[in-house]
Amino acid sequence: MTGGVTGTERRPAWLPRIKPDRQLGWYALAAAIVVFVVGELIQPGFASASGVKTVLVVASFVGLVAAGQTLVVLIGGIDLSVPWMMNSMAVLLATASIGSNARAAWVVPLVLITGALLGAVNGLGVAVLSVPAVVMTLGMNGVLQGLTLGLTGGFTCATCGSAAPPALEAAVNGSVFGIPGQLIILFLVAVLLTVLLSWTSFGRRIYATGTNPRASVLAGVNVTRLTIGLYSLSGLFAALAGILLTAYGGKATLGMGDPYLFQSIAAVVIGGVSILCGRGHYLGALAGSITLTALVSVLLAKDMPDYGRDVVYGVVVLVIALLYGRGEREAT
Image (tube, rainbow, N blue to C red; front, side, top):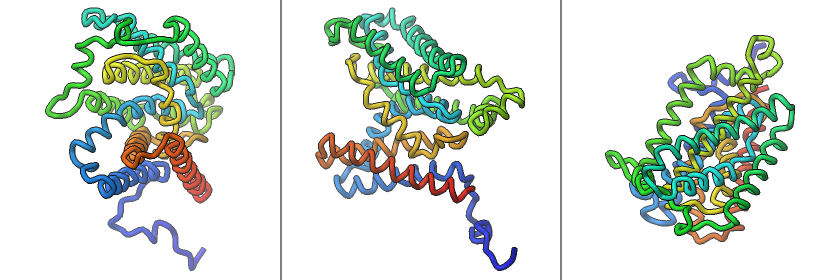
């Protein structure tokens, strides 16, 4: 075919080529920078070092939940159990440790293992029993909510055994060379998942399964075991987020995980992770978490009511989804 100009020819030679499934991740990062600039114009000091650090600390909780959400979305799933997975594990941490540093040494691993096991149950339902992911994880969320409310009597407070151990609070709210503890943990998770998804056979199996599960089975991928493992990791990351959020706030409260369902899914979508096939990367979801949190902070600075923030949330996600859909059509 002659007379046409390809996309490669239009691209300047000095401009590095970005993989199509990573572009929205870069867009999310650019959007975060734009939001910080707008926030600085609206409220001077918003983009200062302390202001950016505050936004990143809050975004770390969304980023951790989005880590597990990214993994299951990459294989065409979704985890709707994260709100009460977080909440129930936070309550388990607080009530089992009773605010004791000595007990925290074994309670924290117990909480992480419990979250991973509950996530594995989600995976078993999806992979072995063929229950749709939406139904399975939503049902698990309801079970965990009911158990938590029943065991606590619907009431938690700092004086009735829901306080976080002081040592855990100090570790999470402390800093190393000026870097908050939450950001150090998030950085380690980001490095781990980047290596996992980019340079390991496990990562390649994840993308292969998300792209074509049947072909992956024929290629020797144990899709059932992979699915169970990824849902288990989602439960683990939700439990970790619950632990850090409890330590950050000093106590576990009922309903503390509710905002993170929509935020984690929105972060994944904004970050360019495809909900239809194995495309995207956790770094994009992490950038989406920062963008979303920065946007919320700007809206709070303008004293926007809850319903207004919800509208903006929805509009942003819809716009990104439409852009993503357009990119998918152009790619095909």
